[in-house]
Image (cartoon, rainbow, N blue to C red; front, side, top):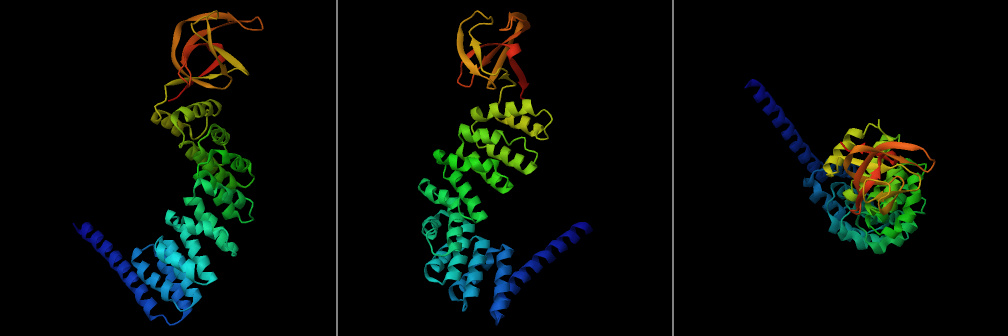
Length: 350
């Protein structure tokens, strides 16, 4: 009981202290007599994350005497992700410094209501406004904004370039992948991370290949970003990639999570990777003389349905005899047939 009372009193004191702090900031702002103090208080209000400060900050954005005060008010609203209408009004009507702070705040908020402001801002005379507009548009853009992002990739401002790469992914225009792909092999890790993010948004076979190549990265952040990106794909697309990764990286630290993901994706218990350099015939029956259903590309993945109970001997192209089981498998497009065990590698999903 005594412990409960102590904990309650501690919680109460923290709650009261925070309330007093909130009240103090409001009072301090009212009583502040110079720009420096007001700017400092507005900054603290923004950092607090407390929506109670939105009203006094908005008042300073609208009525603050100096440009510096109004600029800080705009920045603080961006931190609180509030005041979209007031920020847009400030962008339309105030001076260059407030406009720059307002568009930066709108970019942080990233609301679709500001899309037209970002589209207008990329043509502004102010370089900062152009940069922030691209950063905001990257969150709320549409397919018609692709030329803006392609152009911004060439700008010499790294945060804007990164935003443009992500923006091309977010608008999900598959034909834009060619502009993003080179960044997946960039020497700068930040560009690689942005490329992986977009690769997961494009969800094409080509972007999946780029992700697959980075799953085993020695950089844990890049590897994690690759796994995050691959989670956007449909199971039919991603399971073969994960199976190939498991085969090639038997000791990777993410293997336990990978197996759990395969189970979550309702993967089959076993898969086969085609272990030939060109193509392997999928046969209608478990013998080498049966009809060929189709040819399977080397390194492709098929689901194992069952294994024949008896081993079988065949002669390969070099005249060598090989003994192994036949496996009944199913391809990604639903074809069923048989493959000889010597030409495949069996991988357990989990």
